Length: 168
Image (cartoon, rainbow, N blue to C red; front, side):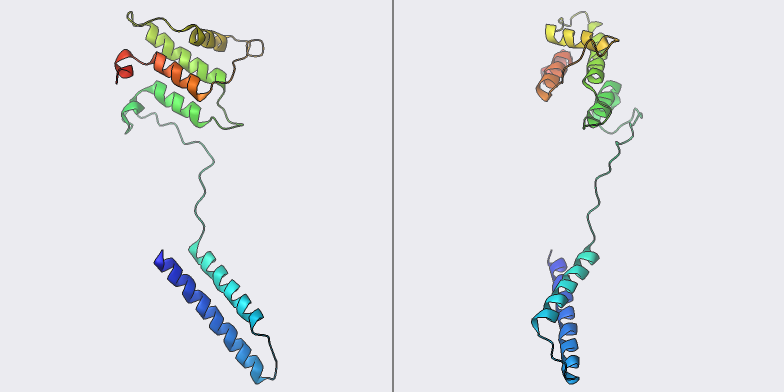
């Protein structure tokens, strides 16, 4: 931080010296220039020079990251394809993107199908069952899926999680 401010001060002083030199040269030719205007312009020029030299921060990328299908993904949950599909859907959750509540509910339905293979798994709640059945309907206009907020998604994922993960 001190280095950046030192560079700003150096540029401001350099531009002010150039402005004072220009005022002095103008005085040699009997041209009277008021002091505040060239100094103000010099200070503005020095500040602009410093800003241009600093550069702007890079903007965040607008495109979604590519889905990494490598099974050796660095994070432990990255080895589960369902988690990666959910992450991919949730990343597209911004307006005018590809995520829909129907797509998210269908992924939850796939997780519920895998969970149903476990004979010790308790039955699904009526709300989650209704959500999954509605999402599987082929006519989306006649059977709309309401918005899924964060609390509902958390409740559904907790319900679908294996027992050993819920006890942590």
